[in-house]
Length: 450
Ligand code: URA
Image (spheres, rainbow, N blue to C red):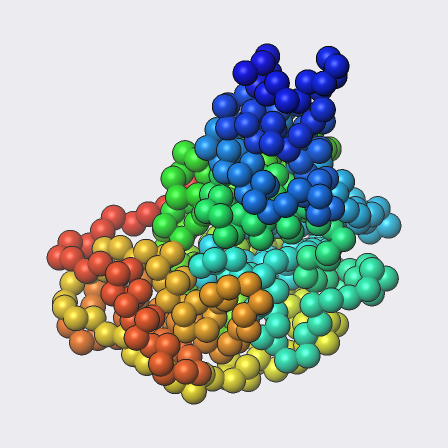
């Protein structure tokens, strides 16, 4: 092995020729990669010159050995500039974006976006689809009849100017390197890595152009990063990357040990979001959404957290946020009838009551397994490209800390295909632990990193 980790084959007449094989070997042996090696790997993979099997090996080496902060900055930049960047300057300084690291029952965008827009923020947002056991905003919005998740650039900007919100799917031209790398990570067990998550999220955020960004970094059984310490590291890393690119950015560390709210599954979650905006939602979901909205408004307007929180309270209580939600859904072609009628999105043909097999307190509810149960019911994809059943999912009648008697309903499983119930029931059995002692309440918001 020669200095810096290169093999002898790379030296020809004293000149180093960059080869992907050597880059993999260098990272495998825990050396730092040079800037041009990172650019070479990202560009080569994005344009198809580096095959999946070599990129997979490099991703696994990064997963196992990590990256220092210079490498991470270069990786994020290479991914950001791998495609187009959206110029949102004509929308002014109040452009606002919120991104979650992924969770179960996480419908916060559907609530935070109208709250923030009703208070002057300009939410020009690109969102993703479900990944693994976690849901995605675009799949949820597609449960609304007529809702368009693709808009031309002019229509996207025009809608934000007019209504304060537009949310569309990730365009293939924004951070295409992330799109390809993410798909590979999803099938090579390399998702839960701090440098890979941080570069994935931040490359999309930087290329999407918003000035003010709040990151919802989730920790717990339903998150990609399970431990709070690791989630804090991830949050700190992403905040640093955002600041280095002159963004106003904060990260909120939130609890993803149990699903957020009562609904898991696309149409069910959209209806639940409307309930929160009407002031009738689950307290845990509302608390997290209020916090994220207030933090984003602090960045946009320079308000204190107390001022922001008061404005958020008024926006929900007065109905202004709910009206903004209706305006947004309608502007994007969606039928907003579900806001007033919670059956308007339809109901799954099969609804099965999952009952407790003993009396006691729910001491643990593994959110990842609940997410998997919802996926097998049809709310998510087993493999990329699968169709989603928008009406499938789970309503949690009881959550961690609740008491239930033997035979009482813990959850209602919704699906269009009753053959899917057995698998889902199996996940539910593994997910839910019942014991004699009421567990201590867990915090919903762990920390804020500014
Ligand atoms: N969300 C993303 O966009 N990327 C990740 O790597 C994980 C969650």
